[in-house]
Amino acid sequence: MPRLPPVQRFVSSMGARIYRIACESLPGLSGRVYLILGAGPPTLVDAGSGEGRCTEQIVAALEAIPSEFGEDFQPRQIERILVTHAHLDHIGGLADLVNWTGAKVGVHPLDAPVVSNWDEQAAVFNRRLVDFLHHAGVPDQRHAILLELFGFTPGRMRSVPVDFLLDEHTPPEGLRLIHTPGHSPGHVCILLDDVLICGDHILARTIPQQWPESFATFTGHRHYVASLKKILRTEGVRLALGGHESVIGDIRHRIFEILAAQERRLQRVVEIVGNSDAPRSLVEIAQRLYGHQKGFFELLALIDVGSKVEYLKQLGRLEMANCGELCGNPRLPARYLLSRTDFSITTIAPTGKEA
Image (cartoon, rainbow, N blue to C red; front, side, top):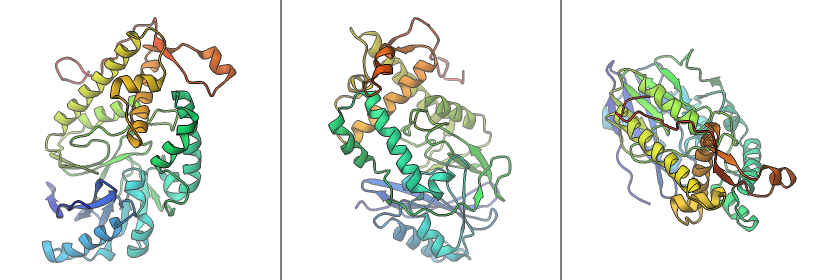
């Protein structure tokens, strides 16, 4: 296991303290949870995965904060745990941490069912994933392998009751909430004076995964881009703290980087389809865009291409070439070609300013 960085302390413009705690969320993936003091009751943001030593690492860090930073605080004083979004690496540790602290759990309504009824949501999601794999053109013998690699399976997490819902119009004491759907339907960023805790909405190096809207409402490329622009309109953010990777000092610059990268990917999908001598499936487009990925990365590439193709269809840039065949056999892969409708796919203006 790689060595985790030490706890970092940040102070907002109004004197609230934010402690950034690292944990090994999943094999090869480190995550960050946050303790907030001085802005309402003691609050934990996210809970890690609950797998391996993740919860143990969070607990050890919380117990060390009073002596290392001189805080008059004990971990069992945590009154609320706020969830930025309901993905396993952010919610899997909720049951243990709630049992340890007695804290109440707050989640956005669109993500709350995953927290309160994991098994049901996992079953529904996996059914949709199988449908997507048929749609994408993945051979049947690969389905079980990819489902297992993704790991959204019944029984992997213990569900917990949701005690209150996160609403940006009636935020928890001391905080401001910003609903930023795209990476998940109910993703929220938490603004604490001039510090933004942004979950997986904006990361320092990578672009968060976007699922096609066929998996869940309020996911997909168009919602993600709209949410990025929502943060661009948020004034006074000095630094941003993500659920992974390093601290972001210039959030606007990072957002423009992400928008530009997404624009390039969209243009590349259009080129791949337009330069093909026959309509292409999602598998074929993904192989042209990302090469022949294996295992989990194969699935991530397919999902990303699925979200891009869906968005381009919404704009009228792509269309399905074999609708009639799919009506007769929905297990056949969809194949795409350029549409005769010519809408712009521009996300940002050439000057780097918001369109």
